[in-house]
Each structure stands twice: as structure tokens, then as C-alpha cells.
Image (tube, rainbow, N blue to C red; front, side, top):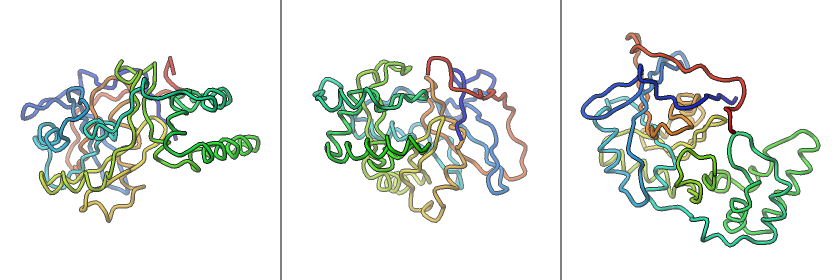
Length: 270
């Protein structure tokens, strides 16, 4: 179920600082009868080639307590891995130009109606599979079934993020960020080095996908972990809060929190 918000979630009333780290209270979410409070950590704009272990050491470790779970946005991990593609390096072909004209426009973000994104998908998966996915998707839409294209092409295409002219960050207007490489290994490295139980997530206003988990979280079902951040506490604007600590607060009182009211429709400009 989509949960939309208008603008930036970083309300000044929810701002806190601890051990030199700025974070924002994102309220309590109850999952399977347990109360979890979430803290969205404010960072600098993490550039390509940065060390994700050192970034986690700088921003997550000062706030982390045993039993916490750290949710890390997949875009940050991919940027650290430099797993990105510049628009200027994508040679636009006939099929991408043609097929993008018939793609369904996604009001919640950039989809395959963006020719460069579609061309990148062709480069990754090959033209035959993309043609087959387009055909199946078109047929299924006639019968009211959506999402077939992405089920066929897979998460590596569904996870392409960028080439989005409405992004709050100019960098993403001409840069595509791919899914992180070996996200389970990334989480294992962070847990081994820093003792942080973490997960790499692809979260937005529409859905949450768990891409990777540290060893201590492997027994937790992805659906359970996704529910902890189903409302996308990282935000979808220019919050610069790619890390979220999820904490079981048991019966303790939650910190004062001013909620941002969700919308019943996509935000203006989407």
C-alpha cells in the first residue's frame, strides 16, 4: 500500500543530536505486538567511492545499541561501490526510443517511459527479454494486471534508480544508480567490523524490498523486516537520512514526536 508525504520529513520538532550525530524521530511502529521506535540519521551527500564501513562507523555506530536494526538505503551502498551509470555513457537506440513511448507513466517516480532508463535495462538484460516483458506487460494490462514487466525482468532492472529530472538532488538527473552488489556480503562485513545488525533496503513511497541482511538477521523473514519501515521513514525528498535505526522500546515511553500527515494521493510534481 502506498504511503505518500508532501515535502521533507525532517521537522525541526523531531530533530535530535547525540554523540555528534543528528537524527530525526520517525515515530513508533508496532509489528507483531512489538513497539519499534525509528531514528532517521542525517548524513552528508554520500559520494561515489566512499567506504560504506567508515560511513556506518561515523553515522550509525554512535547511536546504535545492542538489539537495534539499522536499515541502510540501497542507493548509498551502490554509490559507495560506484555501481552507477552516467547518462552520457548510455547510447540511446531505436528500441528504447520506440518502446518508451508506450510505457506506462509512473506518477510516483521515473519508469520505463524514460528512454535512457529503458535503454539501460536493455543493456543489462538484453533486447529479447525486454521485448518479451513489454509484450506480456501490455497483454496483462488489458486484463487489469500490472507489474508483470518488472516481474519478468527482475529486481536488477526494477532497482535502477536515477535519470530522474524531478529528483531533489541534481546529481541524479543524469546519473543512474544500480542495485548494490552482494548486499548480504556488505551487511556481513559491517556486522563483523562494527557489530551492527543491518539490512540493505530498497524503500520508497510504494514498496519496501529487503535486498540484503546481516548474518544475525537471516532468521528474520523479509516481510517482517520490511514492515518495520513500511512507511519509508528515510523519506522521499531531500532529507539526507539514508540510515534508519529501528529499536525495540518495549514498554518505555516513546520520545516526543510530531507526525507528518500522509496524503491520499501522490505529492505535487510527481
